[in-house]
Image (cartoon, rainbow, N blue to C red; front, side, top):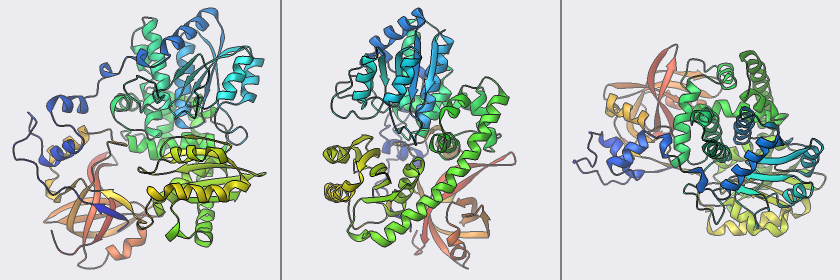
Length: 569
């Protein structure tokens, strides 16, 4: 077993459904587990509507932001959209850059270089903007911790509007407007927007004030869905509406840049889902920000021709291959440090540091280390006595809060509960390692090296009839706080040949009581010989997916874990 299986409550649902329409018991249990317990909630859940988006003006400072932008548009001022280099940042920048341009604005954009400038607003960029007579900067997915930089911009005669969703550190910058649902005094009803979501709400408010038709900003739902899914924020509330509606736009193939990105990934004939965004599209958009400069991603997303989009998509694809090579080398070096220097049995937080690790892949590698060892991981690249780091954690240990407690020994920090960044003097790394492990004593157990896998239902393969499959599609889009249901089926046999897919994946069929279903197991080639043993029975934990091969759509089980069966149903 790769995971510790958390089995569902053995209590059963009453034979009398709580919903008006007949719903299969498997599905009803999933709905109740997600606190959907009446017809009204169910209708909103399976039919998310744009009409249910909150009034953008409920966000603190929104009226100030809208008034200032309208004034800038009317006066022909130079406006700069300043964004982060990840998918959330570049989609948010693309929304405002293209949107304000269509409104007649004199607008440009700026994405900092990850390696030379680092995260967030920089004085160098402000100087550059000042030289170009920019009078208004709108940040996207950054800015809420940039107190000194915002003050510096003000001293240069540049006003700022901040669109961010990160936690504030100390006092909020003295900006003209700070749009952030996570601010302590924010009355905005939904707190989990991504940065691109905040940018979308700003454009929505602007169009409302200008009495424009909603179609003006709704054309950017594809971008907000792309950025929201890629940033791994909760897919509840407004985020669910954004992604549900935006996936329809993405699958209509209207935007040149997204369409060419889909094509170069070999997904031309597939329906794009959250999973494909996270694991296929987003890495290519992120790659340019990690390897070179993310402005290419903005140019792709705002392309005005198929050929332009195709050329940029090819560049992104090439740089993603380079990024993967760097990933693998960095992961290998991190594993060597763990093996030679870390006492895993007595360490709660893995703090790994090395000279000149590539800053662009630290977050990816930290996530892979976290998944393997089930320990929050901080990857630090040291250069000239300064360490820059990416940190990844799991639910139950708020890495941002831990960094906040240790702010006195850090140069800077920022982020979320499960993903953060920091800068530290290299001579303080040992002290930092000691202190953050002490903080973790009350939250991170030493005993379990296994991640937990929550099982929604124990089922037989013959329960997956057309009705259940229809409802599983209705519960999408899936993502954090609305994950794909995980099912457990017992005493399965492997039917027929096990085929190798790629370098490390396998595909086979499983059989139970005469029912045979295709299964795929990623990163499980090492178990091929075990699964090939005669008369082997296994218990499998899996999610149900659709497989599209040569125009034919079938269901398959994506195996998450298995163990040899003990023969008990």
